[in-house]
Image (cartoon, rainbow, N blue to C red; front, side, top):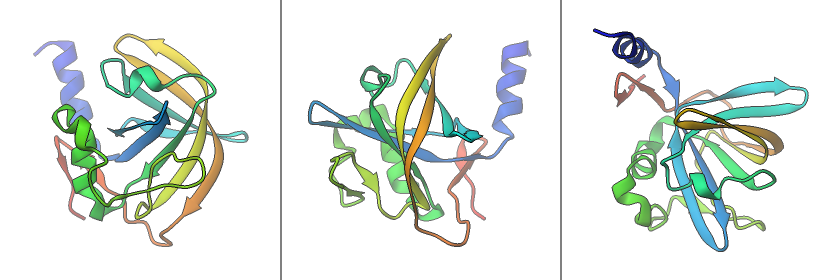
Length: 158
């Protein structure tokens, strides 16, 4: 087994929280499931997310744009699967999961939390872009942690 295969196998053993990043550009709604998202700093409040350059949402991610980061709860596996499949790209919003506020950026009201962000910086690295997101607003929905987790190619049942 080569180094890259070993690395992939090692990372598959980690559990990742599942999030959906959503935005709107020129009236077109976009969303993608991500597991590579983490806090970057508390002061200033910021997140870091990694997006594959081949993802359909990638071309809509520009410095200064607004996005919502939806921290999924364990009951949101269906929308996570929809937003992770390129085959379902055109039907991601053909359901009742989404809500909209004044900015019209879609968000998932049933998420554990919705974090409104502004893209501050984009760093290109190999196959991905690293987004540095400044926090604009936070909506907390659940007092008790109940995250949707992903590990070894599947969702975890707690």
